[in-house]
Image (cartoon, rainbow, N blue to C red):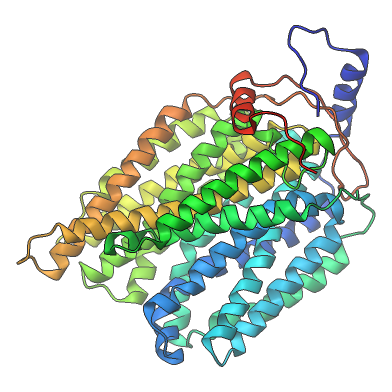
Amino acid sequence: MRTHDPAEPRSDAHDHAQHHAHDLEPERVTGRVVAVLAVLVLAALVAMLNETALSVALPAVMGDLHVSAAVGQWLTTGFLLTMAIVIPTTGYLLRRFTTRALFGAALAVFLLGTVTAAVAPSFGLLLAGRVLQAGGTAIILPQLMATTLSTVPARHRGTVMGLNAVVISAAPALGPTISGFVVESFGWRWLFLGMIPIAAVLLVASLIVLHTDGATRRPPFDLASVLLSAVAFGGIVYALSTLGALVDGDVVPAIALVVGAAGLLLFVRRQLGLARTSGAPLLDIAPLSVGVFRRSTIIIGLCMATMLGTVIVLPLHLVGAMGVDALTTGLLLLPGGLVQGVISPLAGRIFDAHGPRPLVIPGAFLLLGGQAWLSTIGVDTSLTVVVAAHVVFCVGMACLMTPLMTVSLGSLPRDLYGHGSAIVNTVQQLSGAVGTGVFVAVMTIGIGLADAGASAGDTQALGTRAAFVVGIVAGLVAVAMSFTIRAGRDSASTTTDGPAVEDGTTGSTGTTADDDGAALVGAVAGPATDAR
């Protein structure tokens, strides 16, 4: 990989590569592309609903399978760990296999996991099913993003990314609502039984609409990178998802965080070393040198941390402080999820017409306002007020996620779409673990600070208000950074072979490196090392 010196005149070859990359951008959305995206979006929707649907069902699962809350929580922790380990490998997988082969395998793994979980007679087998589900989900999401960028013209990407945003941000918010209804009406196993025919139909449809005409590459597979990725992202996600245990004096999360951070440093250094030597890292870090990509990804991370923290803490408040039952709690969260689902595609159309700033800046303020409003709720707060505050927050999420995903990945050269998508999805998983862990830990600390004579409801309310202060801090950072987001290609200067795409084309491009991003990556890399 070669970074262009701004002081050096661009060569004719460089200009030709840049012009060639522009020619390879799709000019229109064909009927086949619509069918392909429809299958990918529906599969991602089912997968993301599954990510949070089990949260409401955990008490029923623990009762039926006779496990403690600490053991039962592994159904969520194990899912997040698997996602965090698999997603960094998708940049490699997207180049190595055709869309049809990779998507079919991912959906088959997800279907196998769903069947396993539906019939599991023991907790161990149920956990194995969840791990398989997570493995399929981890491939489906980056593949959806990379396919969108490769097949949809730039002038329409905001609209399509709006639909993708519904999957990524609105679906997890709707998961507890759907789960509450299914568990109350049919039992927790139907959360999996109901998915089986849908996943099976999507698998058959994928074999019909996805073709095998895409060229593939055979980049070398680096086992050491996979192992370092597992240690790094697995350790960090485990530490953050169990952060609340630190309040009780458990040092395991702290140890896992240190090990994960060390593994991450080694992983990044190895990827940069592989980029210098073989030109084929498992996860190309080059997108992080692109200013727009880096800043947008940070705000996306703040959004996901705040959203998943809210999805965990707000139901706890409604049940523990206000005495609302599980089904009603799910219904109270429904308006916010529906509003987010409706606004996300509209935000995509606005982005296509006017760019990111008319959405990102107001969206950041709405996110901040929603968190600030939620930080004032108590035992006697009207349910209408709680719903209204949640809706304000969800509108802010919708205004942020669509333009940020579009402008971040759209700022990259075509050959980095797969790796950029893998980075964004990895950040989302890490941020989700951060949000869940920090919100719950701060809530626990707030509960511990309550007066000895306070009622259970007042104690929970104090913890809830403390947790949403974290959301306010995240919102303030998002507001400050929102003013730095502008449309336009701001990418690292690179000329490489493009990834395998379904139409059999590859892309290459060249752009100007972002100086502060290059310095950041260089600082992490340290001296040049041989990664072989």
